[in-house]
Length: 102
Image 1 (spheres, helix red, strand yellow):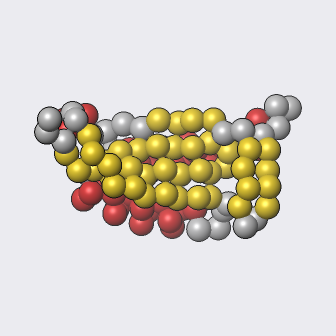
Image 2 (image 1 turned 90 degrees about the vertical axis):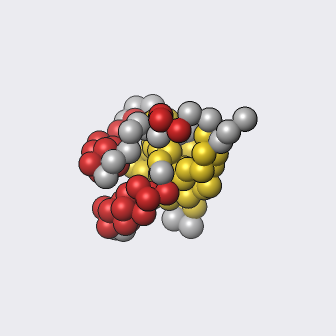
């Protein structure tokens, strides 16, 4: 079966930043995305856990799959946006079956 090379970008950011990040990936040409709530995590900044009383203080994950040519502008803009915040950015090579969806 034919597959097509794409880049998967995953961002774990503070919930309050998510609308800005979504707008950024849309403006840079992403055709779609998925936002996933997170429960807990740990990084060099320390451990955290979602607070059910104040969920806006938690974090969310944004998953985007794009053409490699679209990935670099998204990553550059996202890095500029997120440089001063607690955020994780992951980049993976993936294969998709339906090229027109990405």
